[in-house]
Length: 477
Image (cartoon, rainbow, N blue to C red; front, side):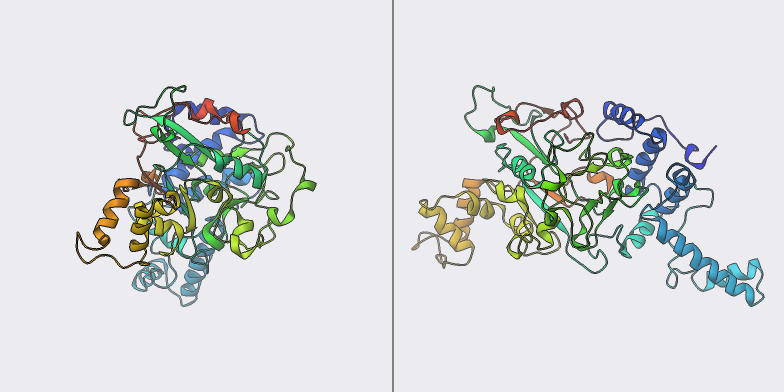
């Protein structure tokens, strides 16, 4: 029995539910690769992010199988684990040259910290037989991530670039117009139906959606806007045998190198959010029609735009923009953000308190007022000017003009306050870099027709067999 079979379980593991798992397994069986291996690796990759299994135990458990199936094991933890083991081996050989026996070497290494502060081995606690790690798994994984390399890295760092691109999405401001979906498709040319982002209307008992012929207001709906979450600790990356799926140092973008991807689809199963799509056929837009500046990032890797046949693709947070290839004025923007009429999508550096998403979250009513107020509403414009420091507030109530408190109350009354913020599936500890403002879908959430259909805007939503009526531990995807 291989180490990966020792604690295999028939229990469901994927947050999208058992039906989705069945679809994933059928999908993998249609490929030339080992479907069972893909399902088990996806399960354990999620265990790694949740701190239930160490990166080292995960590596050991599947190394032989990955080598046999793919002829290589280039998972992101592989290089560092092998390097650490080589370092440990050199250290032990050095002690041996001093004539120290096994017990003496162990005592010496223990006294020297065995790398806890010298070589970094103290956090590696998985046993040699591939069993689960000890309770310091999370610390071990954090230590490894902090090193920052091309295949991974924490949100703060990424090997020399402290920028972490991400989004704040104001679900209470979303009106379901699908402009973001259309804009994403126009910029990246993905085949319709292989949507890189979705806007899903749903009801879960908190807001009763109107009948389709009785839409008085598009804001009578609950919405979830679902791009890729660009997780700092991405399970999809952990299962990729070729480094095609990787976290880029610059800006922490989770990307797919189309020239390296072999289409095994393991990443699609390992993603808790269901945001990966396989390019089954020849794309609708020929490669000759694509702009190379939109395709290749600053490292000259093909990671953007629609992919060729046989590879995985997903939302990329627009590397061409972030690398300045579309002009410096578009750095820190995305197509979906620019297309959103109510300004519900805010893109920027999640590590910068002055960035658009962080400033939006800092004062949500003010941010909504900036995006949605009309110039002819003088009272609202006065309140905005006061809160932005462009106009002096009145000293006291009843004076000439309004006080700062009155301005804040006015905007909160008109545009609503931020009742809650959350990230999707936080219990999986993937550290998603999309922050949501508004209601989190309840356990009874069900997708309903929105005010604007995909067909109305020339789009296709053909993944409803997976997405419709799916509820996930308090979230709908």
